Length: 188
Length: 188
DNA sequence: CATAGGAGTTGACATTTGTCAACATTTCCG
DNA sequence: CGGAAATGTTGACAAATGTCAACTCCTATG
Image: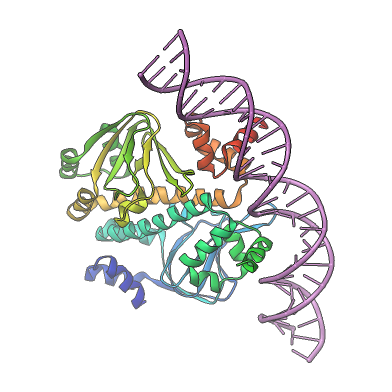
């Protein structure tokens, strides 16, 4: 839990009352490998900090083909962004790839904080901004780069992810088939 | 200018002092067709509200091939996200596609507001969140959909854009060649 | 420890998309 | 108004990637 508070304090030191409030509401969640944090059709009700482990958000089409939208490991804040903020049922389950430990709060609790501890809007804004920038870069990569370059790009920007994650999931994250990934890796 | 204030007030009503401060600093910018709002190599120093017109952010690779990262029309808030927030020189120029009218403030002015009118962090957070959700959806589309489906998806989610924008730019936005776009349109 | 299922590899082939070049059409400006 | 430049279309072909199927290897679990 320390690390979570440290991360937030690094963005900007928080007041004692805010810290105490956070400590009183944050809940810990433990997940086994392959366990779901969020199932399809539910409204994403929590936002979590990843303390240990690695998770993925993915999408499954009519033909059962899965596309991994993101991987997040230690130090990241995760939720099903679309569902959480728009309060609609998600199409994107979240699943633990390794045994994981998370700290989370609910949507209601988050907005209670935004309303009653205005200082926390600064943190919310900075964090959203951070992921926004990451997504902007990801969009560029998906638009401009071919399979091979996307793989190399991801390998340099997220080396930990590339190592930790099964190749079939990595392929779907890159937006290519597992066979194509297998082949282009051999040529490198 | 009214519309900008109305948009912000709709997110959450702002205090009189904040409104007055905003009015005292917001600057208007007029652009001719094809004029640049931001050139490559500069640090993006402003964030703008689009009051009239349509603009694009794009990227140009070594071979001079351009990829349009986004189109933004009336009612949107724009900047070169990466450069603006990370304070680094941009690779992504912004250009007016039609004659445009913008209202803008600088990075410094924005952070002055965040620090001295804490209530505005709420607005900054909500706006960033909004674009974050849009980008999440865009990533899904780029990852999962083929050329044809990406076109149809964009046509339904941003019909105005698809109509207003030259096809070669639209193609680069979709991440496909202009020939492919021309062909798939004929088949529909 | 046996084995079923998951993960990764490889080959053959189909499909999609890109590239290049030629041409048609539109738009912009002197 | 007229011509250059930008935009859009089409064809032929090449390159990239997907799909399907067979096979191997690993590993999780009864």
